[in-house]
Length: 260
Image (cartoon, rainbow, N blue to C red; front, top):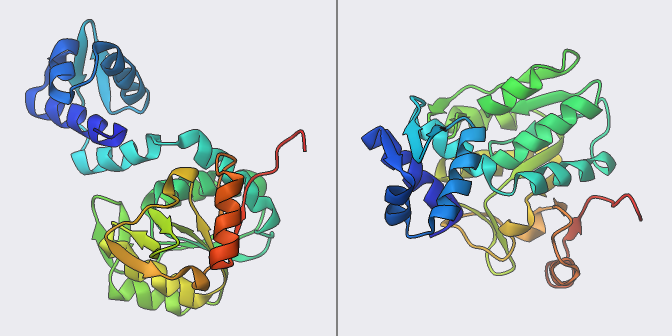
């Protein structure tokens, strides 16, 4: 069972039953009590459950919101380091588009702390909550339908709105990248949004941590030939960087290390 699936199973069980012991959650997920104890610590720090002696109790948050938060836990450090590679891509004064996705939360936090004047266009309301703290940013949110699970705007109106702007840089958070299928995603409502941003932007940048490489999700988004660069973290191997450059002619940018 993948870590995210285990988190979801724990939260769902607590939502349905109100509380559970460490032993019960161990039985439900098929992992050790020690692993469950560590999982509960992580989930509590993220505000999704409350630990008690010998187990945990549920919180009243909406389960769809908790699914998004669980994805945000995964590889959080890598996503934060990944964002630092943007210093050579984004320039103050530009218009920047961000689609939904937990990687772009780290990107939004980086933009707020390192830039003074940007025009940001995003369909994700989680990102909007981060970006509104930058008083000198111009924020634009497209119209459309609301996706409760992703906390994002989607649909034909949203896509038309994105197409009406001339965007300098699109920073695109996606679920999977492969040489075989290019860019793919499991969020079918986000696919049309990403395609609209690719058409509207001068530079198309995929932002994805190391775990997204050599994976295929259910919905095709675009070929790698439509992307200018992939920005990732330092855990991407030299072999992966070389493979994607030689076979797909797309560069993988990683953050510079302090000792280089």
